[in-house]
Image 1 (cartoon, rainbow, N blue to C red):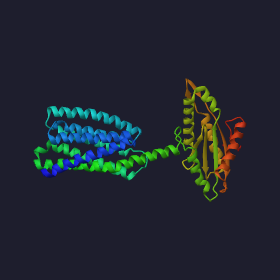
Image 2 (cartoon, rainbow, N blue to C red):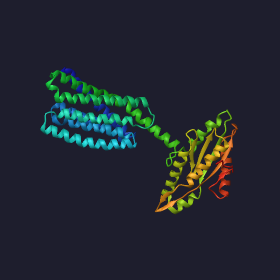
Image 3 (cartoon, one colour):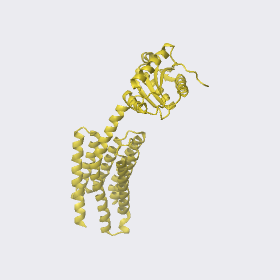
Image 4 (cartoon, one colour):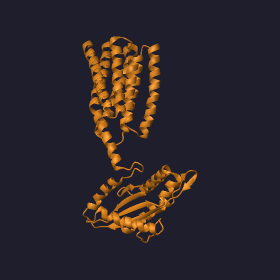
Length: 380
């Protein structure tokens, strides 16, 4: 048993140093450097605690090193997620770090069960790590994320069991059994460390790829499709050969330059965001909406009659007209002009449709803005 335990300790120490060096090299290569720096520090601090424990030098504080290492691991996970839930988890992790550190230090000073306290504190960090994978955004390696969530949850359960046995096990189990439980905990950590070193770089790299794709596809200000992505999405229904009707709306904010000149570009950006939100709320998911650039938006409506499409355009116009946007102790009101073109001819290209819709937009502005062109009668 002693030889097996020494083997596990040596394996844990070796793996953590190797993985720490690996993560440090990734950090130096500028691949999510802060994330890998935290994970490298986690491995090195754990190894330092393990060295103290094995040599008997400052062995009492080894558990504190393990706890800090688990916190750094969690902190790296949270950097991969910028959601509101992750922000709350980050606050909770700071609180858990403070409470856990105080509890472990007090246990070292006044109790012989400091290892049990540390194991419970570490289980809290692994539990929060598991939750952090539950709120990860995006679909990158969804099955891998679920696997990581389960792995971290199992590790948290192992640490809770280890904490209970270290605190109360002396009364109910023999010392050899306690060694076995400790060995299971070390083996679980080795497995976690190895799997982490293999899978996390893939998650990080693919998540970066997802971010770049989002930047390429979505407008950073409004969250709508950008020009290229909108055209790419619009080409799919246009290419269908079932001759289903489609309508392209090109929408422009009236006198937007005046808003920028009078209130400044930050206010102008806020106006665009509010308008984009209003448009998106009124457009069904089956339709495609994007920002073509500046103050110009576009909507591709499919499988809807001309009359219903015109009614939708009028709803959009009225909704925007009714907006009241606060700026510099004033209320800004805005209007939009909409140019539309209808087509069921699959031979028409994007450029043909856009040019016709753009011409209608010019006509709407020429008639005094806050208009829809061409003119159709709205059924009440």
